[in-house]
Amino acid sequence: MAGLNLRSVLVTGANQEISLELIKQLLGNSNPPEWVFATCQDPAGEQMQELQKLEAKHPNLVIVALDVTDPASIKAAAARVETHLKGSGVNLLINNAGMAKLNTLESETPEDMALVYATNVTGPLLVSQAFLPLLKQAAQGSPQTGLSCSKAAIVNMSSEAGSIRNLYLWHLGQVISYRCSKAALNMLTKCLALGYSGDAGAVQTHMGNSGSDQALLTAEASVRGMLHVLSTLCEKDNGAFGNWEGEVLPW
Image (cartoon, rainbow, N blue to C red; front, side, top):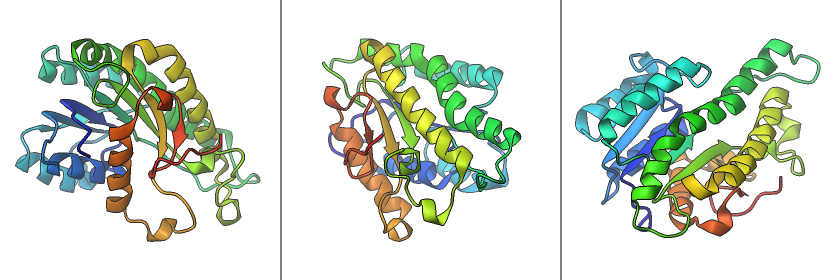
């Protein structure tokens, strides 16, 4: 992670395993970010106890309430983050908040489909829109040239389940709304890459686990790999779909 020099990073869905491990490793880095913003729907909830303990130990960690399905909540979160940054902006936005419903083609419902899309697709769009001004501030204030996560970037946490060609683990579960939402998130990522590349740097779709050894891959190992990949991203990766090892995945 030597090439990843972040002044500030924001992670959504901070109560989830991958996000929590990301935050732990960022804070434990020899050169940790000046600010790590961890967002979730309910900062006082029972699921946040481990993160609350980290916040008590690390003054550079700030837990922020943010519901990715609520535009007012997103706007309020962006305003709170801005007060801490004092004009320096956000270097890296990681859209990790997500959900799944274990439905088959026969059991899928309009209600579940709408909820999963609101969380997994519309949520990352709204969060990216709200934090774009802070990403622009970071990019404009950075001495770096080209695109990189250390300058300003959006990372959307997707899944190989969203790959139309691979149809990852179909035999183990259809999870229709989840698969469709991640395929849509991949398209959103490509659109963000085209629309924001002049302002916010690299936009990368990234998955947490990969391959037949998914059950054997720990969150710690997955995040270690992801952070290494993030440290190497540049122009050629803008809008790419890759796994935690840096391998390009088919759309």
